[in-house]
Structure formats: C-alpha cells, structure tokens
Length: 414
Image (cartoon, rainbow, N blue to C red; front, side):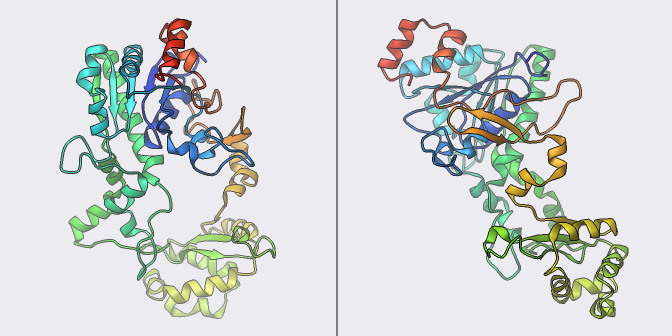
C-alpha cells in the first residue's frame, strides 16, 4: 500500500519473543516490508504459548505470537551454518533497518555486530535491544519483561501493603516501553540518514528503557527521601480510589462472571457527588470522611462502605449513573467485554479482524495511532513458520530454484 508512510522501507527482523517483534510490527503496520527471520531448530517460544486457537495445535495457532507479527514475511534460516550466515548478510545488504533483541554474546557469535553490518551496508540502521546493555557487569544477562519488572522496581510498588510483591501479572515492558522507545529511535535514525546519508547503531537497553516511566518514584526519593512501595489500588491524592465488587454477571459463580467498577474521587466535590449518588447514607456524612486527608486516614472503613453499596448493583448501570453525576468511574472490563461490549472501541474500529489459514478469523490489535493522511493498516495475518522462505529467497535475494533446493537439502533453509 503505497499511501502508507513507511512504504518502501525494508526491515530485517532478527528478533524474537516480544520487544523486538512488536517494534517491527509497528513498522509493518505503517507500510514497511518486514522479513522475520526464524529458526526451525530454536522455535520462537511465543509460537508455543497459549492462548491457542480452539482445537488447534502446532506452531502457527498461538494468539500470543500471531497478534505481534501481523503483516510480516517469514523465512526460516539456520544461522549456525556458514551458508545461513551468508543468507543473513544478503538480507542485511537488502535492508534499511536491522533489528534484534538477542543477547550480545549471540550477536557477537554470529558476527551481527554493527561494525560487521556496516561493512556490508554502510547505510544500515542497526537497532539492538540487549536486556541490560552492551557493557557493564550484567551485559550477558538475559530475560523477559517478567524479569525486568522486579529488577527495575515495578514489582516493589505492585500489590497490597503488608503482602509480598506481585508484579504486574504480565511482561509489561515488552509490550509498550521497549518497542516504543526502539521505534522512536529508528525513526530518528531514519531522519538522520535522510539528511546525511549515514546509517548508525542504536542500543536500547531494555533495563534502562523500562526504568524511564518510574521517574516520579525516583524523584520522590531524591527530593523527599521517601521510598514508594505497595499501595494496592490507592493513590495519595484520591479517596476513594479502588475497584469495588458489583453484582455478578450470572449466578454461575465463575471468576469470569465477577463484575467490578473502579471509582476515584480526587476532590471533595467528587466525593460529595458520590455521597449524593449513594443516597446520603449516614456513615458517609460522618466528619471522618469530610476531607481528603480524613478519608485517607479512614480509607479501609471508607472502602468497606462503598463496597457494601455497590455489591448488588449492575456494574455498567452504576458506571453510567456515576459518570452522569460527575464521579469518575469505569467498569473493570474483561477481554470478552473489550471485544464484544465496549461501544467506544467498536465505534472507532480499533480491533482488526483478519483471516488466518490455520486459526480462521481472529481479532488483532489495530494500529496504535492514526495518521490523517497516511493511516496505518494490518495488511495480512501473522505468517506461518517459514511461509515466505521461497518468496524471500527468490524475489528479494534473487536466488535460483536450484540454489534454494540445495539450501533446503543442506538444512540451511526449512
């Protein structure tokens, strides 16, 4: 699609798991040609992780993998062979951007360091996402977002007081922070190359990228000597500020049938509006709830009173009533509700429904931002493992049928 802003840009995506592939996904969404390089001997584990399409098995049916790899071409290549590394160098010569999140040790073993790539393609922009950087005592440590959350401090602040840290329940830095920072860096490097004709090396250490959003906690310590810790759903400048249980969706008693509504009062006016909505119960009129400071002091009792009031109410009706009264409130939605119930996301057409040869029609996350003149689009579902090996070898690298057959026999391609 020539009207996409990155049409004509060529990406050699040597990454795996989350942070790298998600960055490359955004590049593909806005028009870049992304060739995803995979190994059949060391399968990207995201291909094996649930959720899987119902009653399906194999490497091509993981919703986890497919959601992060739409719009890409896929080639299986054995980089532990000399011929495999030769194919890799041909892809580098073709590409505008090289992307990897392998450890420095693996990058160096395969000879994919920037100095080597620049010899092949002086205009290459090489983006590296090492876990903790290319120098320092932890340069060769590896891990995922679930490792980053404890070592960066997120887990220390996640959970409830007097309980052990629970983390974020997900590989949070992998989805937004790391790929987002790398994407911005690639676009900046492309602008620099457009002006100067020169490529460059990008190092986005996932550790440092993940620490950035914790600025307020760092500032609180440096300015006030205060170490922020677990506060559950609470905030120092709001009360109530919590999720309150509502009437279940049904009487089945399953956890998925639970309904919750988040309520937040940042001012006395919002609190008074909530009191009015609750029908001015006697407990809420007590002086110990009349100011924010007083409500914070008596927060457990405050939350218990609000919880008793919400327990028999429908979450969506309650949300609408509170919002119309000027009280910030929102239903704690499940994945099903985001897809099937949320009117706003439906009206905006956020989720893209694509037809995959093995999983059938499925929902994918849509473009994360919209450009008025050159909007992004998911052009194809995630590729099957090695789906485009022949196409990439013939149409991009110019190999003959005989050469491709020999490489398949020798185990270089799969």
